[in-house]
Image 1 (cartoon, rainbow, N blue to C red):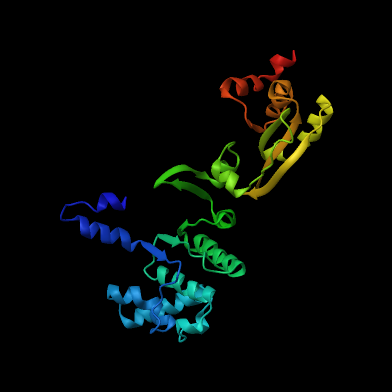
Image 2 (image 1 turned 45 degrees about the horizontal axis):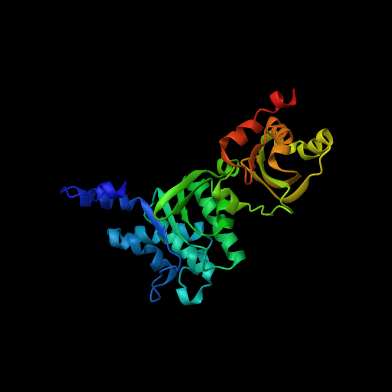
Length: 284
């Protein structure tokens, strides 16, 4: 905890510097020195640390090769594209062999194709170097593309966190709704809108068609999204059933029995949801 390390004891500054040395930083607008070559920019953190010129040069060449810019060592930032500048920024951030790479909106100034390339590089670095990459972003596509875990912050506080797979499988998750929006409003007052989350085996079964046949009910699909994470299929769907909630307690209970997580839009209080969770008793 860097905040705890920044205490008032005599040892606090040294401990804080040591902790910061294990963190690399990638900036939104690159922050490269225009008067220095690409290699000199990568060497800068090592120069500040007092590393010898020969060691700095060897490390910079190694990192430029890692990020695919070995042929740009003598170029200047003004001669590079935005994606190339960000690769230089990543190489510079890795110069001190950090354990954590902090990326602050590193792709928000890039076009979609370049964004995908930079994200692919970060993912490869994570796997090759065992590097923890912490992304700060407002782009949901970035989260979907590379993140294993995610946290949502509001007002300076973490209001939701977990692995992406867990969040997608959580009914009512705000992050899941942002990642895979499945909007759609009821077509009339006498309609029940149900949000379904399915994963694992339930994602491969024809649950909706079984529901329609078993209860002779017309099901309207208002929206749906499906993704695969860690080899698991995870899907979200919003459907509409004819009739009010109390008319659909048994069909909704059937959906729960099939292993789906169910959230009924507009259902008031936990008692209504609890009632729908006991379909067998109602059916008998």
